[in-house]
Image 1: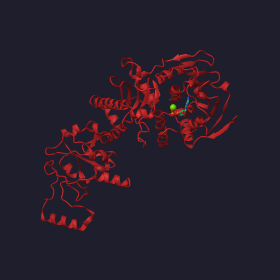
Image 2: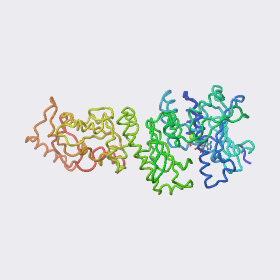
Image 3: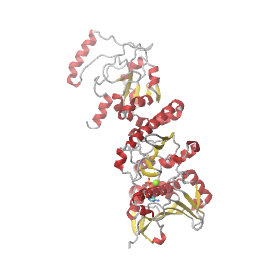
Image 4: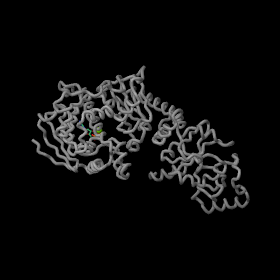
Length: 554
Ligand code: ADP
Ligand code: MG
């Protein structure tokens, strides 16, 4: 027999709880979505484990989630018959923060003030701990499928929690029961009308049936139909349905910028439902660059680690459901399956095509999408050889003539000067620094547009970027800039005569004085105001890439 163990929350959990309880975040309803989504995950995990161990279902194969309203005692109870948690799992799952991205989220929320911080909570799925937005005490009784033991986790969210053994009679036969002792001002969560509305709004497409019990001993009444949205016909699904489903599957609180839903038929059959989020997910720049697309086999969740999309589409959320894999498929089998390659290719094509259409038809939505994810998409220019042309054409830029990052290369080429044969660019850390660059003088004087590239990824793709419309890329900090073929704009300053004896002598003097520290000294059309500037050699890294490689210790 185990006595009551007291544990202190991991420091990050304590911080998160403090933030949540003291935030002015008004939409507390989200706690219910978080608990329901955990319950649904638990049911799906059980379904998956039961493929190999059917005895875990113990004669109760139908997954369900029930919400019991206990107005008399001011409690709301969320119960599922999913996989359940053992003692160690309770400590691990409800005492620490395992999720990547959460730390980054907390740093941002702490840096932000008041209202903005509250908004951030809304954008981010805060998970189980959000229960403490509405409850001053939370009890979790759980019994893992197949186990003879049940445990009780209990906390007031103020720094510590306890774990103890629970009587089997007081525990669900299998799964988890979460009892929320509601606060004075959150009593409304015992109202049938309120709870039903929230469930319909937020969790209408959870693939597990949800029922409400109006009182602890009342009959359960089912809310929604528990069918998987993606199996329905597109014509039966409204925009709102898609948006609700997206929020659930993506853990986002916004609207999707783009929805792609299709069924692939032929050699490989699968259904894909993919969304581009309306705002940046918090794990976008995690070093592991992992995607979050979920793989289902015949509506059973299998894994979200199958890398169904290339890394440069890691911001895409959603799922692929196929009947072409066995349910007990292993990770190795998935990776080696020709189906996976086919899914990757198919979904990537459909998503990119949809983004292209957006660029053509809904410029504003596209501009926002590009602002959020352009720097990630550009990774594809050097990672996805087959689609690099397509990705370059999709890219948008800030330039010397346009501050918004909305210039396409088609725009650029259309406005090229007579005699101009290359796409000119300048890379650097920030816009202000680039704009002040003396290297730009000669280009400005001739009215030549220069792309200003400030994303770290730019230095990498741009050196291997494919020609666009037959025009090569050229760094203006690299090699000789032969601008003599291009006329200067009227009123621009005249340059000093190029080859006067004075200049020739000076160049010779400079070469001798600087010696081995430079490879050459040249006169240039590049400058009109400044006397000198540094340029990189024609071949090899340009100045920005050189700096970055040095920074990386190479
Ligand atoms: P996330 O769902 O993103 O992992 P949460 O904070 O919502 O984060 O939940 C933390 C963990 O607690 C889950 O990953 C899961 O392991 C466990 N958990 C929470 N609720 C349940 C439940 N109803 N049944 C089983 N495990 C659960
Ligand atoms: Mg969760």
